[in-house]
Length: 290
Image 1 (cartoon, helix red, strand yellow):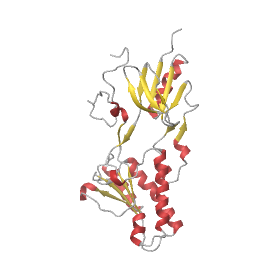
Image 2 (tube, helix red, strand yellow):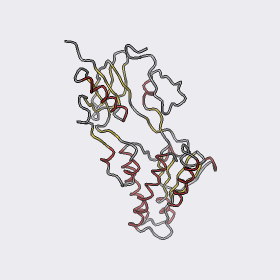
Image 3 (cartoon, helix red, strand yellow):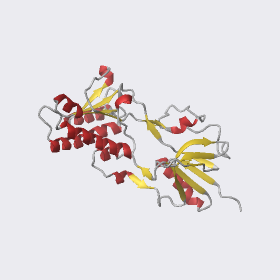
Image 4 (cartoon, helix red, strand yellow):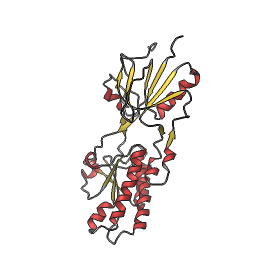
């Protein structure tokens, strides 16, 4: 009896889960499908600003993988190296144990990672915001700043703790700034900030306006609404730099292709839209591919 063909999928994001579900239906047990990911849940990223603001419960952004993908074996672990000649994926589980599942077909759906922000100082002083752990940490960090600000012995120190900057005025950064405003206003009201300590919420970007990917009229409307709600947008291009006394910088500078680059594989980078286009491995096509 011949062995069932093995399909290994690295990454359990949107693309990975869809890829796992698509071949699982017609295979009906004829193929062995393995999904490798460091977590056991499907991360839904768009609502993360609401999680950071305490509006949405964390379970609303994380769907458990167990039971959701019938006919798919889920393996916890982080893929660190891929042996293309030996057709194995070397992964390490959360407890440090190593494993090497083999494959006949390999799908790399590792998703994206945050870009390095061009805003000076962000890389050295910012708190990350990507994934559910980052959103929860950010919420707790903001709470830890507002509460001490209410009893700070110095007004400048209290004001610094109440100054929050979001670096990146794209879709997610703009929404994060707006949602966090509701959280900080509520915290300030409950903790009764002393006289002279006011909150500041800034939205920084190297682009000349917020939401640079949208129509300019919509961008102006969003900027006007944000300012009315106490969020000031500051284009770095207009002034070159911003020297701020603050506590938290929250980066949201967009994304770039994920860890495929770190695996030393030859990539097809001819596409002008590398931030969204797939990067196929060029010298190891699947059998039968032209």
